[in-house]
Amino acid sequence: MTGAQLELISVIRAFVKEHGYAPTVREIAELMGIGHGTAQRLLQDLADSGKIQKRERVARGYRIRGM
Image (cartoon, rainbow, N blue to C red; front, top):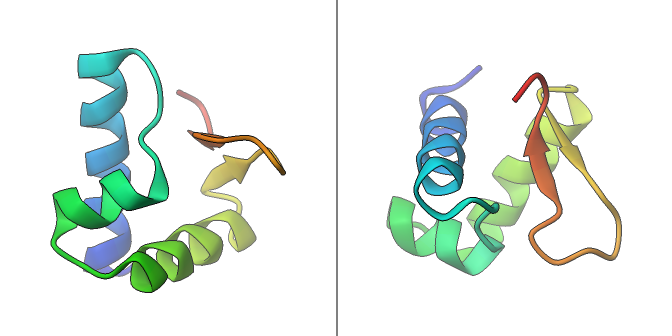
């Protein structure tokens, strides 16, 4: 995994721990200081590699496998 992917997983874990639900793509982008499209690409890359799961057509639908 790249450094950005590891950071993204860390951001999701911290957000879920604090709020009890997953962040939106926009919230991830803001927390990481990156663009919305970059956040989407990182999420898709992680989903394609099986590190996270995305429920289609569901807001806040990303979930880290094993969490």
